[in-house]
Image 1 (cartoon, rainbow, N blue to C red):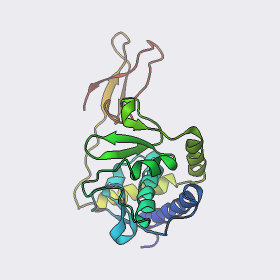
Image 2: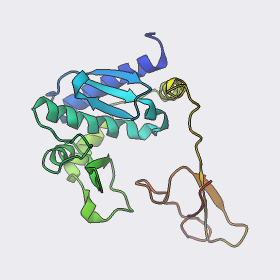
Image 3: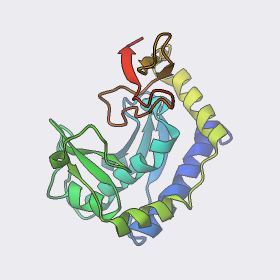
Image 4: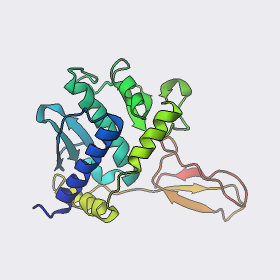
Length: 223
């Protein structure tokens, strides 16, 4: 059991937690358990009743580059919880008074969700969201976050094996099929085309320019 990919990945996540705690929270966060529960319907979540950061079944769909920002998001919840502060409601509404300022202080860009408050976090501001719904840390804080993240190294192969293991264990069903969208440029037919899993209305919308016609690739299909 100890040598299973998910167990080894939890050890890497513990190391990442400790590095972020020291670098961005001045070592003030309490230790937490980190475990994998594939039947939980989320990616990574702080479960205060269990004093644990739980890795759920949706991790199998998470891009590797998004793991550290997601972990940092949950560590904001850890920080507030140990101070007796409720920064999120039962409906997952992230508050402007408690969640937002702490998230900004550790270098997260925060985007307002229409029903869940300031709940979306990332490393860079999205291009397709109005500025009034985005809050960005100052440059020095972003640099500090990047420096801390730069000290953390995940084994790419281990992540891939962990995601595959989670797919197999998540409720016993077959993993959902991934659809890639078709994008084309304005070159004369036959157009240059590319495929991407990024949606044009997503937070990390595709932004690629054709070097021939200098136009952006536009989504023309959802299959």
